[in-house]
Amino acid sequence: MDQTKLRILSAAAKLFDIQGYNGTSVRQIAEEAQVNLALISYHFQGKQGVLEVLISTYFETLFRRLEELEAEQSGQPPFERLTRILHLYVYFQRDHAPITRLIQRELSVESMLAREVMTLYIHRWKHGIAKVMEEGIGSGHFAPVPIDHVLLSTSSQLIYPFLNPQSVREVYYLEPGSDEFCEWLLTSITQYLRSLLLPANIKE
Image 1 (cartoon, one colour):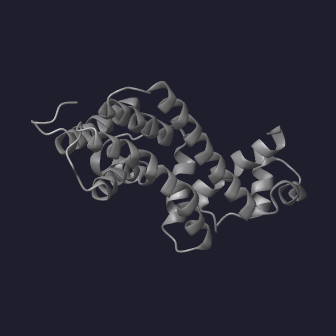
Image 2: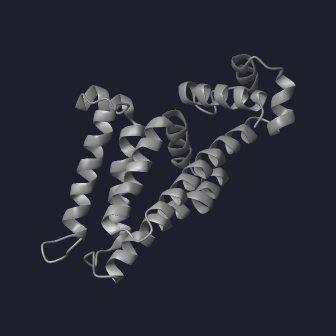
């Protein structure tokens, strides 16, 4: 991707995070990116196009990394595969916090874009984790749990700190952008999943 497009996307991500999508104008994006206003229409067909590219780039990068990780983990025990996927996802959210927040905010509003994101990306993300759980249950490594219920609870733990960082800082006195917090969050989620998937009579 050329530098002009990257500058526009970077500027839009910053402004959308601070002001919200609806509160940001194309002119403001152009000024922040220091580009001619017409270039946003030329490259992205407007503000909506910028948002769609930000979202698609975020998820395609995430899925590429997940696919690379799965290839590396071929033959590993399912719980180890699962915890490494969660590790990647927590740090990916942390490292792309403005886009993570933007996507979660957009998903909270009923819209055509939200439905497309859920159809194209959220279902795909869910399927990737559910597949590991299903394989673990099928091989006897995991207890037979209601996968959708477990995934919903796990997703809430994964998403909340990065969607509401100010709340985490002011109410819980934790810094969601730190490595220390990410490791604490991963430990908490891993312990939760271990208690459900690996009861005493199940071997990893």
